[in-house]
Image (cartoon, rainbow, N blue to C red; front, top):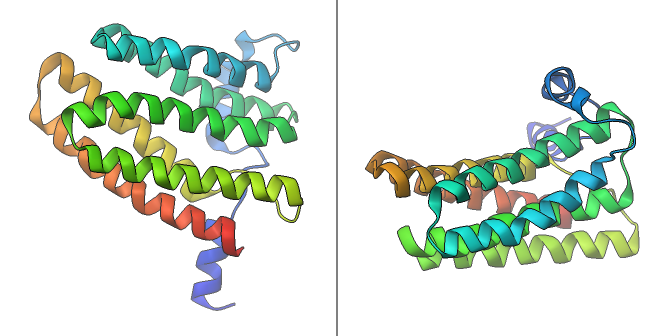
Length: 203
């Protein structure tokens, strides 16, 4: 296999089996949740927190917004780990888990990135996320390929979440370094988003 094909194969890896971080989350956090709580419940919880986070940021309640955003973003890690460690991966979860992530980042970014960085950045992010959603829905309808999570998509979500957290920290303590690092992470997330779209469309 050529280096190019190896790289594409690695980038196209799906997260269907428990990994090290899943086992850590299972040991320290997932034991809290009884068996009747499913990963889809956590995804629905994230949907519920999105308007709360948006309202808090819109009204400049940044400390509360930081707390709720971290809880909401952390639920993304928990529902994925729960799905894999408890063998509860569903088609609904594959579609709605990333959609909830995009709504969380999109609504938060619409307020913070526009206010403290650049309207251009959030527009690029939203356009790329829209293309990603359309690609995933297309695969879901056609059932031609597995549209589950891929490494670039997961890394992109991590970069975006950390960037939003740094922006919220900047609003509270006004450290310019947090603002600069946030911008770098968002540009890196844009690159990862483009790679992720390529994997959806080609592989």
